[in-house]
Length: 138
Image (cartoon, rainbow, N blue to C red; front, side, top):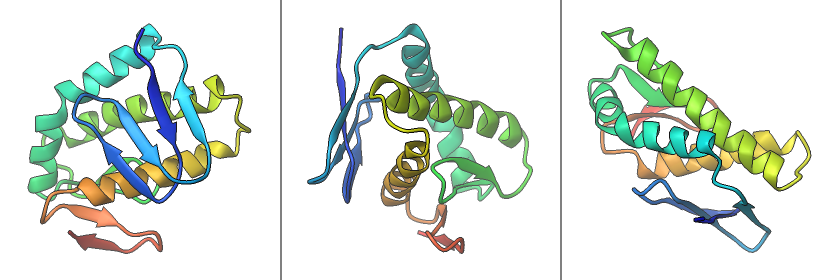
């Protein structure tokens, strides 16, 4: 069984394989069990990557400051793609909290860390929401 390590802090990288590595000096957390639900969420995210990238390039969706995608212009499949992506992200974030016995309020921290990851890896021209809530183009 593959283990995915999560270390929370300032530097973050999301690997294209779906594995996530967040690094800092703080603490290390793992997805201790690759459940069928987590595997399905990671697979689904990989499967919609190109469609989501296209919607971002069109300005229809952007990365918000809470670790999720948000519809900015209701175009074609934007609503359904965003709903599916956010559902999978939420499942992954909650799995990290549950499998590491973190307090429930840790979810907000995980979401913020992932929001920074998504801002950092956004393509030039993509819409991103900064920590204060303002939307900008990367």
